[in-house]
Length: 124
View 1 (cartoon, rainbow, N blue to C red):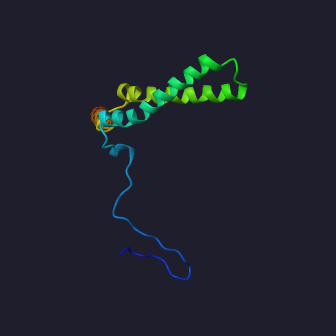
View 2 (tube, helix red, strand yellow):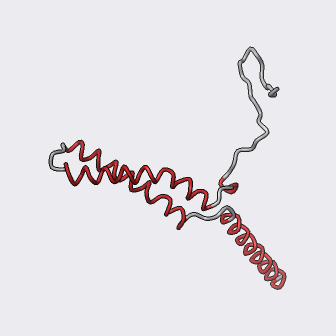
View 3 (cartoon, helix red, strand yellow):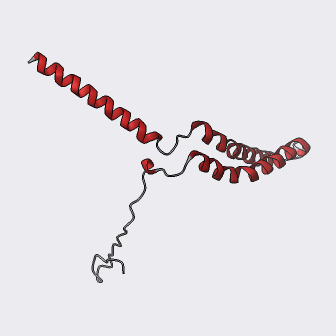
């Protein structure tokens, strides 16, 4: 049974969960699994982009301007979906990338504080 906080008259209830919300530092998905997941949407986008290019090449002169804008926007979105898996491979960090950088910064800060403390003790 979920714990209930509040009263029946006010109608205010708060349900507490034992799970904590994840933060950006709690990334558990590897780079390759994220690439594979985004590749699932890139394959249909490739087919749709092929159809949009054919529509532009074969019927662009007969299309009204509204349909040209719609087809161009659809082609641009398909291009973004096609490039997304490869951008993930190039630019995404692994699961421990952010925490490693934070640990390096903490070590630098500690070293900087130690040298600053040493300078203060010599000057005093």
